[in-house]
Image: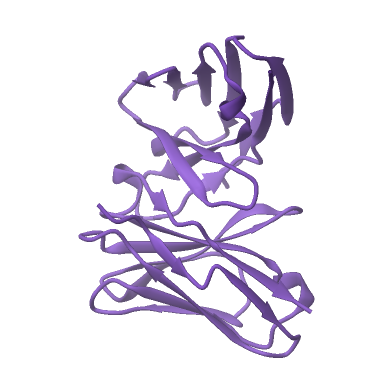
Length: 113
Length: 113
């Protein structure tokens, strides 16, 4: 059974650019969540999608956005990159959120220079 | 607002020791609690998921307990091995409509050979 796949694994971007990260959930999972992990703030929730609709959103600026496609694959976009956006971005999939637990991908390491 | 605390932040033990990692949370209205393992620079690997109605879960040398009323969970690792060295994170999933995990800051475990 394939796990959660995130691409790319590593990215280096320049301040002011934008970036798109991709996440393919486990087959049959309809909920996809995104988290940002930094040494200073730990793991913080970005947003969660279910059946192409954003159901929950964390406390991040509008530069962070996402979407989910009909096949449950999800993308997140960060516009006007700042140095502080450098982080490990993790995607998690679930049948339908909390009661079923979450499976995480290996993450995308974003470095903004 | 849910807050999750993990103590200790770091732990170093000789190989073969049994050990306990602690997790506490402030809001007992949870669906479940999940323990994860994270190796440096990698994603999260789910270890155990405890539903709010359960008291404990076991997988191999791992045993996790949950006391929802007191807001505490423990992860017990028996006969530790150097391969157990990693950061261990606990996360709670709230009951209700929110679909997001709140993470503790983790316990960095080193098992010395």
